[in-house]
Length: 188
Image (cartoon, rainbow, N blue to C red; front, side, top):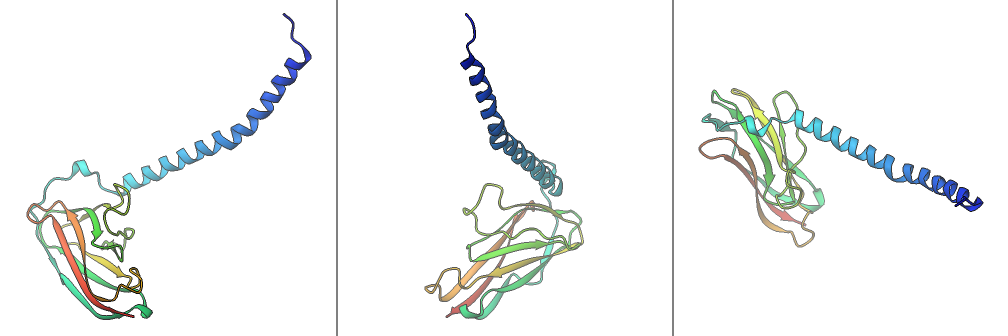
């Protein structure tokens, strides 16, 4: 069986099609996989390994467990407050998760060296690890929990009295959840 002239053309056409496919599909896939690997690697080194953390019997104090914004106007927009948490014991406190009771509220952990986590919201509105913090509060260290409330998040029907919670899930033996709250009277 001999090859005809058409067989050579088909091979060249096939090679011509494969080159663009290589650049359209393979190269972007390799780049995306590489970026995912690098991002996950950097997040793993920034956070403390969960498997190395035990239960802590340490103690802590807070400057306030609750706060009242009083009257908050929708037209004035976002308000915020900061809660101060001090590890008064001799062992570290491991912060596993940070989350809020409503999507109108976001919270952020600010460590004593100025390092800040991202803002965390309500559970059930993100991925499985979206609330994982993985940070230590060293013995004697004071951190801040910055809380931001958006009175417009629920639209015009969101007026009236509200109360929201911010929860730090920790490795503390007695009361592993440290809870802060705030309230406000939302007006238009």
